[in-house]
Image 1 (tube, rainbow, N blue to C red):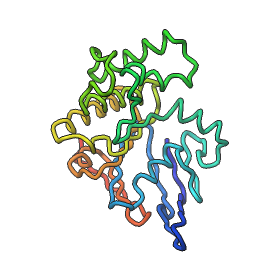
Image 2 (image 1 turned 120 degrees about the horizontal axis):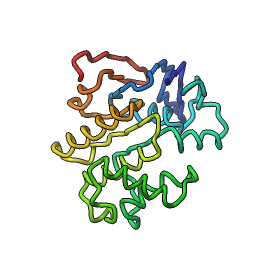
Image 3 (image 1 turned 90 degrees about the vertical axis):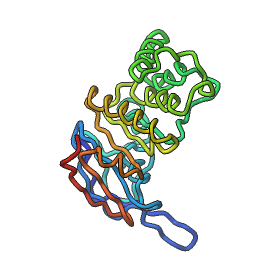
Image 4 (image 1 turned 120 degrees about the vertical axis):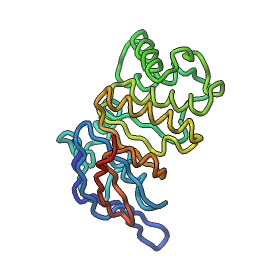
Length: 228
C-alpha cells in the first residue's frame, strides 16, 4: 500500500519558486487502480515520479509497504525500483540496437538471474502482451503499438508489485490506444498489480475506479462507481 502524507515538491525557476506538489495526502491500496489527471504543468508527472522513487519530495513522506521512499539511501531506493516497480512511458524508451527480447531482459539484469532464466522470462513476458512471434525484431522493425507492448513486457517481466504508466498511449492512434489499455488492464487484473497511470485522455480515465485530479499541486480524488 502507498501512503503519501504532506508531500511537497518545490522547484526554483529563476527568482521564482514553483510548488509542483503542495501538501499531497493520498492512499493507494494494494491492487488498486488510480488515474492521475490535470492541466499541463499541474504536477501529474511529478506525483508519478514520487510514487516511483524517481525523485524525492521537498517535504513529506512517500511510504510503500511501510518503507518511506523519500528517506531511503540511494542504493536501497534503486533496489526497490529494480524489484518492485515497473515503469511504462509515452516514448517507449527502447534501446534501438537490441531485439525485443533483449530489451525486456535489461529489466532483469539487476536481479542477478542467469542468462537462461532471463531469456525464458523475457520470452514469456512478450508472449503475454501478444508478441511471442517478435522476439528477434529490433524496435525499428515494429509498429508504435508493438514497441509499447515491448515496453510493457519490460515493465512486468520482473514481476513487480506496482506498475506506473506516464501517458502510455500518448503516441498512439485511437484504435491502438484501446488495444494497449486492454493489455494494461489484463495485466493489472492477472497479476493483482497496484496500477497508477497519468493520462490527459478523459475516455481512458473513465475506465478507472479512482481518478486523482491535480491542480496547482493539490489533489482531489473522485470515486468512479461506473468503472468496470
